[in-house]
Amino acid sequence: MENFLKVTSTLKEGVLKNKAYTLKPIDCPIKLNQNESPFDIPLYLKEKILQKLKNTKWNIYPEFVPDDLYTKIANYFNLSKTNILVGNGSNEMIFTILAASAEKTKKVVIPTPTFTVYNLISSNLNATIKYVPLNEDFTFNVPAIIEESKTSGSITVLCSPNNPTGTYLTFNEIEKIISSSGGIVIVDEAYIHFGGETVLDLIPKYNNLIILRTFSKAFGLAGLRIGFMISNKDLITELSKVKLPYNLNIFTLITLSEIFDNLSLVEENIKTILSEKKFLASELSKFKDLKVIPSEANFFLIKFFDSNFVFAKLVEDGILIRDYNSYPMLENCLRVSVGSRKENEAFINSLKKIFKYGEKL
Image 1 (cartoon, one colour):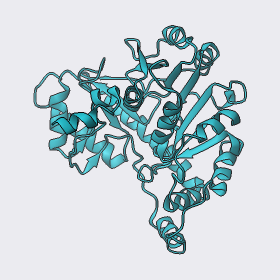
Image 2 (cartoon, rainbow, N blue to C red):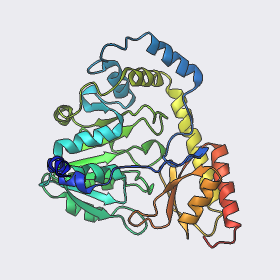
Image 3 (cartoon, rainbow, N blue to C red):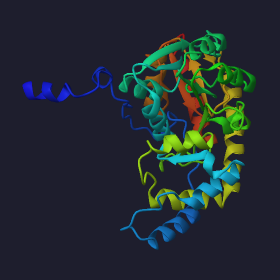
């Protein structure tokens, strides 16, 4: 015990007080709990990728800066390569930004509820966190965010569309926050392909803006873990000092390069997901005893009378969605991702069975 205390005395206070990010492993045939794309990469494309991987040396490091990939990303988003930093998922980009900036003397402004990784990393780094609760309808309290972000050296986090609520900030609202901020503003656009308003056009105008994007959602590459940040050249240069070297492996580089050569697949999948989202919204609207939060993302946050009962019954039917019941402001709330038509119908049919039990949900 004494030796253990010696070890823990070297760890940050925030780490010792925190709980690890975790998901309870529940095995269900239908998985609608992590906002993943319902569409896998086609087999013919996988075979092409694997053939290229077979012909690539595994005993040497990948490119330090994968110029070809950076060029494809820059061209797709109409950016310069100097505006981009690519990482092992947008989570690594979040860590990179906060590791470079967050500390006890810096305030991290986090509207809440939102993506929990921001709170986890900020608290691990002993940053001073200022939570700004969303309004009762889950819209953002913009005046309160502006007031808190005025502090010099602040780091303000804006997930838009927001996870897990699906609500968003308008272009003008985000610009007001950026222009009033005394420090960096992170705009997480992980779900922007499904709705909301991007602020990409503000990159040349504000040197304190960082936009985060991911290839996990619309691009269907959650298993590869790849994302990137967009900002001005000078800030990207500084943050590059914090990013770990060789953070992208050869499999990820080859796969994403092929995806950019087959973007019609991604665009078609996005159209289908948006169509399925309309179907799911229409079906959910037929239930009187639940409340669906309007969403600009590829998921819906739903408030039930008894979310524990609903969650357990869905699992019995082999359907896994996300339980947010223990989160602030989200009592009795569950979040369901938009899946394939078969998955969405199974979810709706299961809900119909649940309501037939005679329970007031």
